[in-house]
Amino acid sequence: MIFNVEQETLPREELEAIQLRRLQNLCERVYANVPHYREQFIKAGVTPADIKSLSDLAKLPFTEKQDLRDNYPFGLFAVPKENIVRLHASSGTTGKATVVGYTQRDVNNWAELMARSFMAAGATRSDFIHNSYGYGLFTGGLGVHYGAERLGATVIPISGGGTKRQVSLMEDFGATVICSTPSYGLVLHEAAQQAGVNLRDLPLRIGIFGAEPWTDEMRNDLQEKMGIDAVNIYGLSEIMGPGVSIECAVAKDGMHIFEDHFLPEIIDPVTGEQLPEGETGELVITTLTKEGIPLIRYRTRDITSLNYTPCKCGRTHVRMNRITGRSDDMLIIRGVNVFPSQIESIILETEGASPHYQIIVKRQGNLDTVEVQVEIDGSLFSDAIKNLQQIEMRIQKTIKEFLGVSTKVRLVEPRSIERSQGKAKRVFDLRNESE
Ligand code: AMP
Ligand code: ZN
Image 1 (cartoon, rainbow, N blue to C red):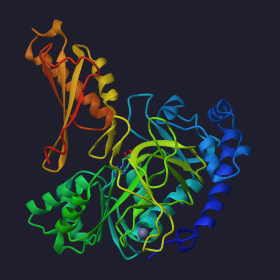
Image 2 (image 1 turned 135 degrees about the vertical axis):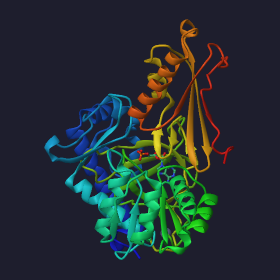
Image 3 (image 1 turned 90 degrees about the horizontal axis):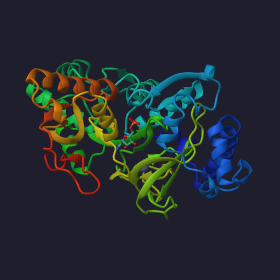
């Protein structure tokens, strides 16, 4: 079933005509209302009037995460502050978070796109949707929540954590749809097993998993363990949150991007050139309808490819393939974005810690674990163990507070971390090896 048949099955020419109209309107809005964009347009020698066809998109400047940080908190907003009805933010050290704002219309559109997503996954208004995405400043929880209500389904706003209780509520309430990160799906399964509950015996029938990279093998595993159809959902806070694209349950072969709202491109991450159809590169998205914080050619850093071949579900919107990596060093730990540089600045601000560190990410059971090894300052080495433990705890606590992830911080002896001759290798992501 299709939630918005008219928009989701538009013939390509009509869809492209709508995209062009919206792109032109977007350029006018940001040029008039956002000084950053006006400057960038002038620098690139382009004005809104130069956008005469969709191919003129390539003339426009890119927007990067750094631009959001430089304009923290509200510098890229395109409407007066009183028109913003909600803020979300991604984690970051003070002053460096990326903040996004939504108008009432943005929030309504988001709910519709999430409702479309649910229906693409096979859900209907009769479903009980168990929402384990985190509520709060992250976009996951509330994004899914309002979409489920818009669909008319019953949403259970359980948020993350308290896994044992989640399992018993899934059982008691008879959840039919589970929304979580794929790794948390596995954790739920494990907890269910421990509680003697077979998820396959519950009414559960659909899993909507996203917010972190996963594979088709993991899909098969989750489907088998839970007795569900598992689909991949994609989104990012800068663009909107979850519901930028989703797989249809019919094909389970790439995520339909809601193209009446988002205009995608694939570029070469090094040269910035647009790549021909089907080639793999960095996904760039222009928001066509967003009012609060519209983004022109936003570099997602996510690596994928686009598939324009018609889908058997009847939707005409392009499909993006699974994300295979990132063109920057961002780590996704249990669904939370973490840049090594954020951990570094916390270490550097801690007295007694040296700037030599390593971040080791592993997967234990089904959960990501992070160990941060930090060399202690030479002058402190003879200090009492108690003080060392205090330093470890302080770093651990600050990382948790600012980045929202739990880590294990371990101080190691001075000069025990290997020095590199060139680019220091600080991150060891062993998740695939330890699976
Ligand atoms: P956030 O802005 O915190 O919602 O994080 C967005 C980032 O999470 C994206 O840029 C992707 O790197 C990652 N992400 C979200 N959904 C998926 C998915 N289905 N597969 C792989 N990575 C994803
Ligand atoms: Zn489809």
